[in-house]
Image (tube, rainbow, N blue to C red; front, side):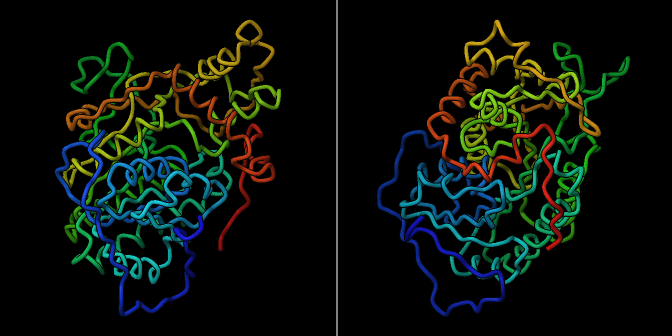
Length: 396
């Protein structure tokens, strides 16, 4: 990333006596910028060389040139510096390579850049990996979040907002409504909607459990230390820059290689898939309009099964008449939640709604991967394209 990127050691670093000052431009872009309630000046975004957070960072850096955005990412296997190419020369952007587990590094960045907002995306997120590598999920997702919370506690005179990005998987899977139940239901979808304020956290896999544990730490800091926190819980997201261990980019890569699409079990689990540009707009809304103490579900009301996603990708390649030839059913996960259906009313009340249809989003996603076939080196993705990818155990 040239002059807009620097790398810091995760060993203790003395805080310099002089800090870099970011001077906001006199004029700011007005197009596509919402009326801002909260006005941050310097935002630390963790994990923003990854998929969702890189798209969020690109949107924020471009839309808000009067705000400084500092990106912290350790560049794990699924991250990619190329994800941030669209903003690498922007004056309100800095990239720092480092680990959220380094207290010294976090404190240095907060003081050096006068960080007033922490937007915490960094996490291990792939469910398949968590079945064989669960300790890494605890270390990164739970201890990493705890380290950031302690950073806030040591710098609460500077940091005025802490936004923790979680997942809808903390709810567990939707249950069918009981007769005469007062729970909020969606009859068209045939189940109980997960509501931010009423639904229990009942995670069913190690990944989701680590995210639920991280959330509980944030909640405890709200009660014990009055941290000005917001929590988000997101649906599945797809689109450009997603590492191909996840369903949609994996299947695009396999189609490009003339390989069959490996469907877990019968492909019956249903998911809501939110296009990443809509997701980025949602997280922008939360940053500027979210209310301290609130939890916001981020997603779409439209659901589609894994098998239907598979067929949609095959159809997008013009091979609908040959779909049986392209589908291979493989062993299911140890446990596979059948559906997560969440209420997004609270986020919509802030003025956000998704705009991209699934059909158009799939087309745009396929086009992006075709144009960016060298975005990842072949050796970096080969292990992700198998039916059940597993990362080696990492306890360092």
